[in-house]
Image (spheres, rainbow, N blue to C red):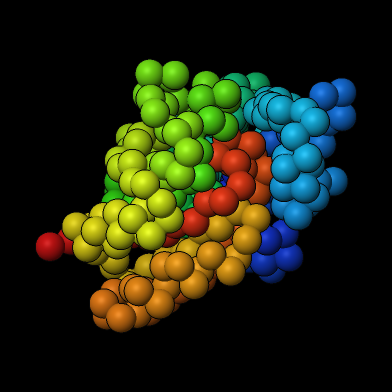
Length: 282
């Protein structure tokens, strides 16, 4: 009997890395007009941002169907495997609901579904920890319990170029977006209790980076877990943040990179940079 780890494409895993770690990924769909794509399967991050910047169509995302999860659950049932699912925040998507419906349809008890209450690299932190616990021999029920303890410590802070994409996608109301469309205003967002929240608005990129640095000082990194530099269409934005963290002696020791893919990129747009990590207890 094995333990299967399943997540969705909002985790922005490199598919080869996921394959090596024995992680199954269920794709959300992204639609540009009449053209529909599966995130990570027939739509790469590079092509997605090219289409997004062309601006001919405002993309839309859709959760996987219960059938997408059911196929994997039935495979596990047939072999007697246990399952741990780490889903995109239930406050941001119906993906969690689709997985729950699929579990009911499968009528197989050892399926444990964890609401990450996070997205992108925040989900990766949980999934990678699940793999570590699986490989140590922990049963699926205990893995799920450990993930539910860890998820509240995950922090995502990111500077976005505009709140317009979040407003269009319904992740922020027009009132919440407020003056976010004002020229040169760079909002800072977080994922709090599974939902997107604005935690700062600064004029210009330099001021926005200072906001990020301040937030990371207030919520220090726990280097017992990997941390991720987040970016959308331009990895070179690391030069705006990482050297400053190094100067402050705050650069995470276990630093990785995560390109924010189509599922989340649809809602945050290009020009994003930030960090995802586990906060250290003080």
